[in-house]
Length: 126
Image 1: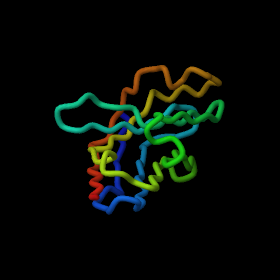
Image 2: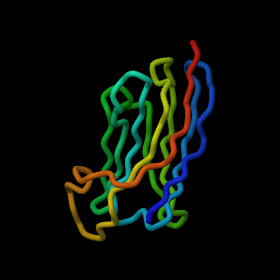
Image 3: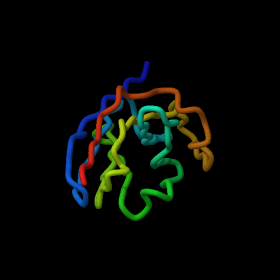
Image 4: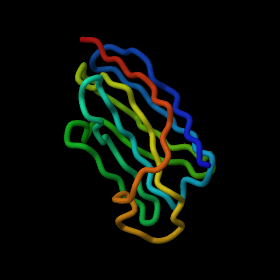
């Protein structure tokens, strides 16, 4: 069973930065990993994904240019660096992963995100 553990959430003022980490009990290389967020009463929103074979990232329009997703296979960890934070970025953030695929797959991030972290709260005040 793959486990994901997030860290790095917190409270910041608008314009500030936070970096979320997600440690995964398995290789990051060979799977698609993603960050999602949810506000109470609203649907979960995809924020960013990172594929590793081939390397590719994708962002929601609302965060493009401000957020950066990355991964470090040696540390079995992937990250979400968030800059120029806005109050509307306030949410519970979740990391997630597909099964380990181990193959070259340009559509890896279209697969089901089967494994999820427990969530970490990000609060941005104006």
